[in-house]
Length: 566
Image (cartoon, rainbow, N blue to C red; front, side, top):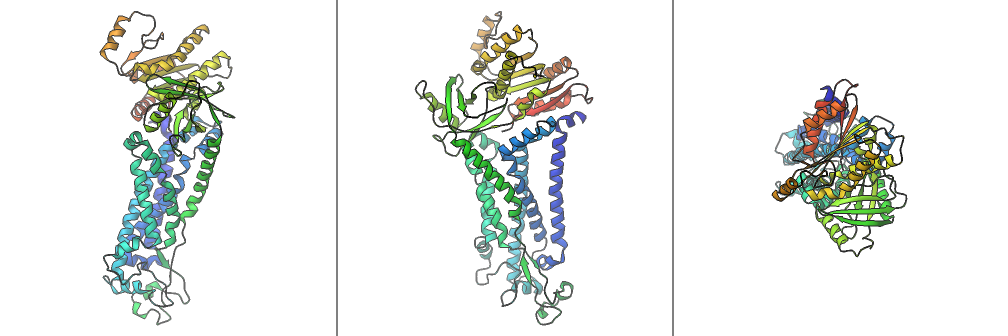
């Protein structure tokens, strides 16, 4: 348990606080609408439908206030930068922004379902009361407002339509009904298109439907203006519910029981969401300003395995290791922005990204670049960023484990390049003493573009007598018979036949228990930062091993798990 708390304690605390607030809001507003006397007559018409509709609405207000904050990337980068002097655990919470965004979205989806079902039942009960299906009190309450100088309680005002059509008419003729339908449809499209299988295979569908959030929030702001949930108001003389509820035939005829006066509650949702909406608008303005800044191509390189390298220059651009940018190519799409980790080092006078063919947008970009004449500038490119990630903290640990899968190597390319420059410049501030680097790939060609950097690092470490500073292991997880034959023939060569490096390529997947045990034995009193850029399945394995091999004693080896999220 102690080991688990090392990596997840603050995350668990944050989750408990968030869930606790949700539960408190639900219980508090449920009890309020289920017991307060000003809602007695409303409860008489729709029963438990009132608290079951209003309690989820309160939770929705809270979570709709939160949902935009985790995707305000510039705000998060500002917060992360201000936390650089604080603990690494605090900064890790900022790096889990998308996880929190998804949790809040799930809560919004759940509460919307409960709220919608409750109101569907409420409309049916309101309609039945209007038709005189229930008792005399329900009928009299529903008739209020039909005459002058009285206010109404039942929002179903139509009397001349077919009773079976009234719920549909209500849904498409009232502010609350129309906005509710629009909000629900937008949310269904947003949530369904965010499923992993759609987001991975049809990113454009995910991207465009996600922008329905504009319609969602617009509908949300106006949804409460319908004021369909009404409560008893103070009047002179006062209407005594206890005395008058069984004497509806005397309402307005005796001083003791005047006609009850009702009014809808003041809309409150806009007060919850206006702040985050302003912040997000500022976020988009910053993105637009960055989009308008000139970006020049320094170099365009096409690597094996359909990996495109873009070396770009932009005035005033400053980066740190492991950071990422969003790219927009208006030639392909005016609206789509895609995240890419930078592979250049802060010490270089340009920034670079490596882009793998992984969908329509990347395929179109690679196709455009391949057709360019040699030395020509590419199409206009908008750049938003840079934005911070967990990899920025790699130099805060004396020992670091870097794990990349496929193109997930990109943040570590930046880190290893920066280390090379720091050694070249004899940087006294470099506190990192040992790096373990693991790269998992399915194809041999994928190693080619990165092998030159590893060869340079190998040479630099040997010349400085620091051959043990970098331990790297390359794992090939896919091969054919011809490759096996080639490796067998050249088995005695000093360098690897795949990469040309002195370290031979491993075949198959790493045995992570063995790797973690080795790191722990070689660094018995160190804080080890474990950094991953790769799939969720691998993240689960590494996170479990970080907990498994961490010592409860803070003076001994502890592994701190960090994952790229963007």
